[in-house]
Length: 298
Image 1: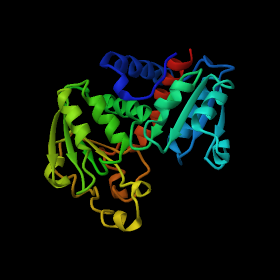
Image 2: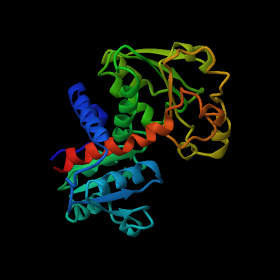
Image 3: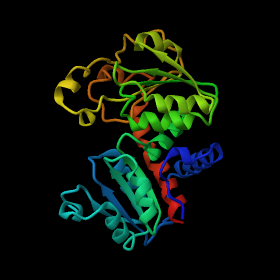
């Protein structure tokens, strides 16, 4: 049984193989119903638009169907059932479980109780492997994954997409640049882990000091839901914003990415600049998640 829990479980060959498979699906443009008759449980205990809908779309394009739980309130967890019991029961109904959960480590735990493959669709501040794979796919559409400077901007403390992407880059000859507001720096334990795996990391105090050194600028929003109170959030909110002026003089091949939703980090005036790839990035979730579903179910 092949679970997809963390990008840390993937080696370079695994990543490249899955991206190749996604590219092949993407180029075909028409799809075989390879998952005809297969059922996926979409257990989403945190809000989601892109991840949930793109997994559902990917599944439907391959002939499968989804059964969905959208919230704790809509499940037996609201009656006191444990997640492990929910997973045991649901896994007897379906061929794969796609789980989003607010608690870091929930997907790993679920995989220990499931009789079918589990795909982690985001767990707390931990990992978001499907997002990372489509991020890498988007970068690879524009440039090789080796020999590039990648800047992570924003909430690097709680941002699971940033954590996952940083871990994935240890498989490539990339340089990581971090740009975070005070208090939202990447956890030191993760930084140490990345350095031990050979990733060069350059820390910057401001976007302006970093942006001209980058091939990829990956921005994230400051996540209100991760803060203990509104005062803590308000003290940091709106501390950075990407505008056309900031992008003047950047490398010609720069691409600007964002996992979305954005909450003011990117001026809408940037949307029409050639650097903006975040909507294409979201679109790429379909072929990448189709490849992931085939990889886990078949």
